[in-house]
Image 1 (spheres, rainbow, N blue to C red):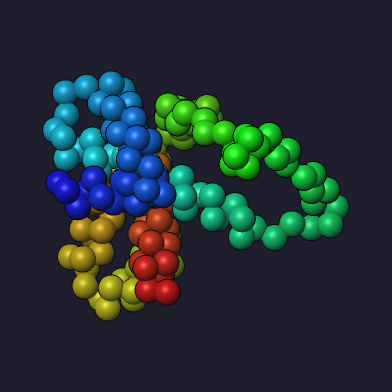
Image 2 (cartoon, rainbow, N blue to C red; image 1 turned 45 degrees about the horizontal axis):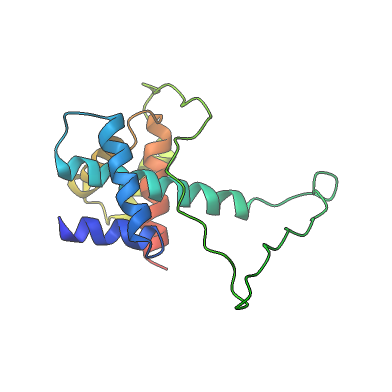
Length: 157
C-alpha cells in the first residue's frame, strides 16, 4: 500500500497534499471500495492524464492550424523575490463526457503487436490488459490494448 501511495506522490510531482486530495476525491466519488482500489484508481487516472498530455504534445501541427504562441502572464513576485504560494486546487474530473465502452475486440494488428512485446506470453498480455481495463473501465477495448502497448514501450525507453 505504501508503494501505491508513493507512486501517487511521484505522479503529483512530490505534492503530498495534492495526492491526499485526489484520493479523498476518489473516495467521495466512488463510495464503498477498498483502500487499495482507491489508490489504484487515482494512479490509473493520473497515468491516463499524463499519457494523454504527452500524446497531444507529440501530435504534429501544420502551419495552417498552428496557433501563434502567446506568452503566459508571470505572477507578481513577493517582496522577497519569490512567487506567492497558491493553495492546491482540489481535483476535478474532466468536463468531457466519457466515451461509452466498445464491445468490439481490438484489431489483429494491435493484438499481435502486444504479443510480440511480451514475447508471446499470452497470460502476461491478458493480465496487463485486464489491469488496464479495470483502471479505465469506460474506455473502448481497442484503446485499452493500445494503452498497454504504449505503457510497455514507454517503460522500455
